[in-house]
Image 1 (cartoon, rainbow, N blue to C red):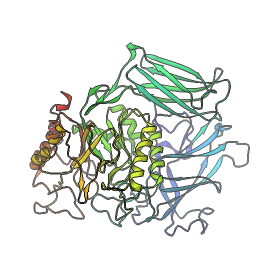
Image 2: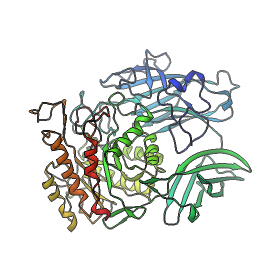
Image 3: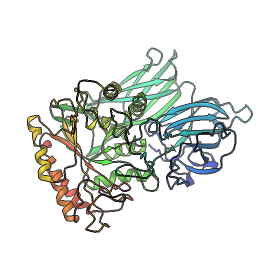
Image 4: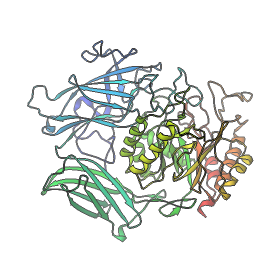
Length: 616
């Protein structure tokens, strides 16, 4: 299916040829008519968060910005990296007259962090959460009303330094430091307008069943009206594969079962990422009131003791940590090609997947992962949460973590490339005789994830404090740089005594109970070939794990030793190497920050191509 244009409704005043990020932003729920609102918006920085009192809602703003790039980024045209308490946006939109009679929906891919939206001076929506998508319902479009086809959209985004929020790797200090990076404020993903029928399909959830070769499709509707039906059609290159129709008025979210004939069953796997096309329609008699196009892959994730299986087979997960930053555009990819290229660069280096680290990635990334057969673990951006609150760079847990994470799960549920979820990363709790608020939030996030998705494994927290005894998998972070010692530390997995992170005050985690296990962060070999050979200490301009290697040959030897220790362990289902690219001062990537070659990629690939003992 084609999802690379701005849709038939794009007006001449917002030309696709000059628009940043013109591709369709929601590739698994496609309608024909939409209007991409990326491009030049009015913009103003509101350092005292006093803009509402000073009349910014009513007047023209002083500057311009290129949406969807954050004002801290170069591509935005603003490049302001100081703390931005609040920022304001304004855009005048001309609605196509052919959308008459349909309801208008204004979509935001992501706004960091606390967004308020006004249209024609009237507040129409609020949203908190810098990583998750949201939309604002604008009501029925009636072009007969005076000036109805002209909308004045104003957005205020607050990103208060002292606020408690999930912020991933965004630095709370003025400068970047260690593994903390330039902040992102305001709009940083595509903004777009869509006309939707009054009776419409709000969302679909597609769950594959490899066991019986079928898909379950659940459709959420705007209303359940008598006489209406929901139809789902599954197709491949040879035509219709399966079809099902169900009444729309009996169940709040009608469910359909698509059984695939045996001769048309084709699994989604890394070596053959086959995707079926899927169309879901809301019908009134023979009339289609609403229709959405999607796609899906038939694949399963299951477990057998310490074995985590893909489609019932052991597939060793050679993952790389991908933080999704670019020097010119920060958390926003500069182009759709850049998203795809990161996956291709990782695969060229011998990786078959990634941990999408400390941010909720743009959905277009997942679309490319689906098409390329690239395994990913979805993650929330909340590094270093502490039971004692926001000490230093730590992020305190609140109910907003749960709500925002559920929004991310809902958006990304249908992507076959996602093989696991991880709502927390490197939390800091110590085993003692009391339960903390962070323990409560950890359990709430785990249970919320399991309730939202029973088809994938859930890791309660990546590294450090494992607090949920029934978590589906177990892991550790180990940045030991000596391969021999690294191998010794992980030899205990064979006797159910794996390496477990501990703190100076004692154990972090509940006991290991035989779950599938992987080292989800390791390596991080520090190497900047431009540094003088005598510069072995971390600095503001160059940072990595352990002592910097003396030369490239030592890096390849260390890399091969570290990955080899895990590839040779029959009880290890995978690993995640830190990391794909350098990110600002953190210079331990396989590639440079600008994605140029830093190493001999053939040697990195060769070290990973030896057969994994897990797969034998």
